[in-house]
Length: 560
Ligand code: NG6
Ligand code: CA
Image (tube, rainbow, N blue to C red; front, side, top):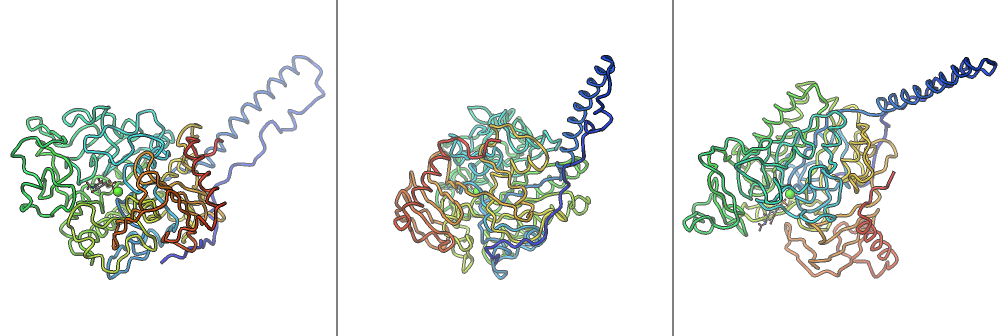
């Protein structure tokens, strides 16, 4: 398991801005012996011109020398916990993740790498916009018919990268809504969507696979939709005889445990109802293969561009139904098998980069959208088969919680030859990728863009003495709920709504009452079990105020 202290040894050399003298320093232009007015005007004009040229030249040199344009792949796992990966402490007898471990061994592994929320939609919103999701309505877990959450015109990670000349794509789970205020027009144009906020191409699962419908959205359309069999998606049972997880429970190949008892597809009942679109429907088992296939194709097509691929895996979200060849490959049932499938995907993407000779010019970020969960609505044996596996590693809590396990997740950067290998305890978050990649690629960010995204690129590259963030707000779901606030070793919990410690994760089902504010010292208490607020009233007060200030200010990225 990784040590908590950073251990970086060598420094990465990046090309430096040119310190050469500008042409206005040339001695010949500094003559002062000329008397003739014409010649003087001429010289003054020349001097002005030369200064102008020098300024342009130096700014151009500065930009090209500083900006690097590697290909970028962000692999975001779904519901993957800190302890679910070999290099983060998963025991091999439970789970083997050789491909992800290889990324870490040849890259940089973060022990304080975070996503910004403990559910999917808010983390993804923040990852793309660089803005804390608690600042905006409508950022809680998106329903099947939810409209686009990120509005066209908002600066996003892909829109910034497009300005740097990148080809951009998202392949995989979306869960950020599609269409105008009335929601997606499933049989027509699904607009706005990813293409309106900076992606050139999308190949999506619209929400989550436990929500209807099970169809791919390619650019603005449902793929393979037969107009004679239109797709209908709704919240109410469409007819009295429509089979559901309640009426046809005995036909299910995976039973539900809570919710998830509406329309049945592929032997699994879901959240929400749908009819039609039969030719467009996919099998759960084929999702990962399809996304790898489409990603490989897209990478190959764009091999000569700088490209940005958001590979948005559905593993290990429920329903956990990996391809048959992965069944029983972990010791942990479907949940573990889905991790093995995820690891396979990572291996395939790396293979493609190697095959196309792109590895040395591609930076990969591997991360998760929230912490782990055991039973998330299906009886897939996750809890029963957990044995001594600890999906949240040394932390407590997981998905839905502001405890560390909710947002502290695997976070690995990989760029052969560029990243200083090792393990680091610097704090970084998926919300920082927008500002960090903008800085790397030399794109200037408008002052009001990505208000909570910090440029931590040097820390992501493992540069010597580079610092990550000094503080981070963690949240559970949507606007105004519960917060975690980490600053150094201190962690403040603020419960505005639930007033419960939500640790319904994994082995123990604790949902105990909590005070509105609680304070923990993470250096001694990773589990956040000992509230020391009363011993440290000044720290408590300072932390409360800092958090409130960040909430009120509407931004936390310094103006520059
Ligand atoms: C919850 C679902 C859960 C999961 C989650 C979203 C029920 C009872 N629970 O409402 O199964 O779908 O939403 O997960 O329906 S997330 O990772 O996309 O945020
Ligand atoms: Ca998730």
